[in-house]
Length: 389
Image (cartoon, rainbow, N blue to C red):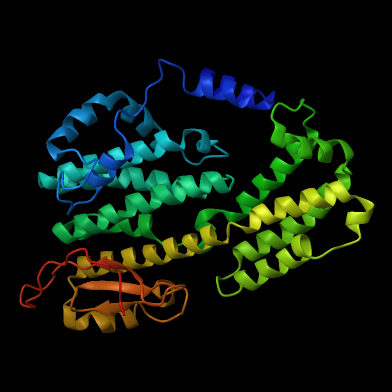
């Protein structure tokens, strides 16, 4: 806690980037001992170990886990936190995502030893953490890291259920709550807008001297811009931005386009009255509006939670393949495809439920369904490309 307070103090007094990094990553800091490529290989349950450059044999994973044991233990203490507020995770993104991957690799090792219950318990704790993380208030950088962590962690459950469907029945109530789709509210997009507004306000209050050449234009904005006009205009943008981010996906793009036209593209009298301030608001709004793709990924992850909930229910009730289309049709509106409003689709050949990608009609997001009926003749589903055309 003392260390965290000291780091927070560096930000508050606007210390230089080099000083901040030196304190976050001192020479004696614990760091993940393995690069990203081997971690990516170990996360794939069907990877041909060692077949790709940079991959390490799976036999080395226990040694790597032991080398990072203290760092992993410290990281997992964060799982007890109820929420986060502007965690400045961007400064530690490589470490955080490395630990998320290493933890998933540990789950994979348990699964290879058929310790499915142990793998599930580790998954449950980590998934609860990444979901709470996204509930917290953070800027777009922090949310991006949270989305990646979410996308890395969720698929592990699919693999556990394909191998051990009984996990769904044993832990049904716990899983139903963990996987419950909450829509865009699960990602606290209003918190993003609040954090971005706080960043603007902090910038205007900052009187630190310029230390890097790219800051000169912002120094001029801070000195010559009309601060209250900046705050008022960005506040107007922020209200519309929050409304657009919370809208259903079908309505979000046109609302975002209208905000771009009003605050970025069109000339207004503010450029004559307050040229530096108007430029600053336009630059800030332009940066915020570039996050449209991340917003789409939030809706896709929510749709994947719907798939996971369907997979959970089918596994618990051991729904036969022939009954899956009817099951999907009657699952309720909260478990339909959020982009089309139609029921999720069933691919009996490959044993998967899916929804088409909202921007690439020949791609899909899917989850494999275990063989729940021994008389179906279907083989255990494999991971295959997501093409549906």
